[in-house]
Length: 103
Image 1 (cartoon, one colour):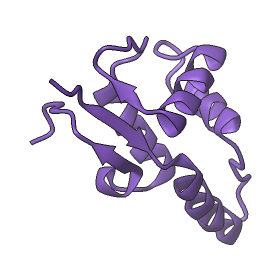
Image 2 (cartoon, helix red, strand yellow):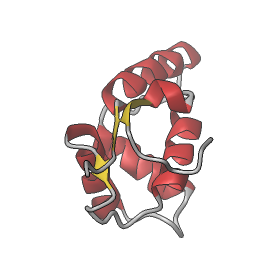
Image 3 (cartoon, one colour):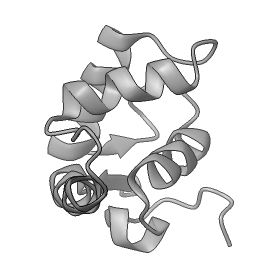
Image 4 (cartoon, one colour):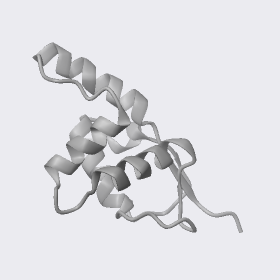
């Protein structure tokens, strides 16, 4: 039986959000590590910078699979990423062969 995997496209989402921020005159995100820092500031009780940055890199490169533990609730993390980056879940996710309770 093949395991399900979820993989996200943070680079594209960061570029799009940075373009919106430039238009508003706000500071840009520019990197996955800066995104992790912003999420840690917004949700200090949920995320730790180094652990979150590593998890985000992992989600972009190889993706999340049920057999590989992730410290954070994947559903909630994706909601927070979508809110922070101003994107829809379907625009953020590249590959989704998991059933995560979204439907």
